Amino acid sequence: MITISDSAMARIKHMLSEEETPNMFLRIGVNPGGCSGFSYGMGLDDQETDNDVYMDVKGLKVVVEKDSIRYLNGLEIDFKESGMSGGFTIHNPNAIATCGCGQSFKMKDEEGQPEMCD
Image (cartoon, rainbow, N blue to C red; front, side):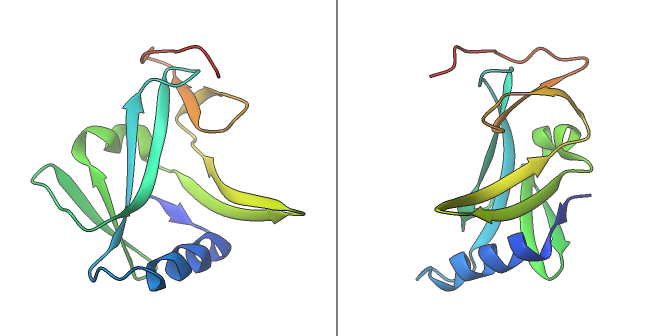
């Protein structure tokens, strides 16, 4: 189960409303790499594959690749604005460590592919 806060949902729906391509959805995934071993991928997409799992989160179509599901169960997505900046934040209860950038994490039982930070 993935949770999306009201502020994140509003931001995602705003982004979707600016897209010219119909049937766009939110795709969330995990890739090997990043400072801590795994990195998040999140963006709008309109291409579906046979390896996708579909979820409805507050009326929003969310798509996750089957291979990423085990890393994302319980994931919480929020959107925060502060001063001149803002952005999406991710809280993952499965992660035992995260990078300072918030885009990379480490799992208890899997090392991933840690890379040097930029």
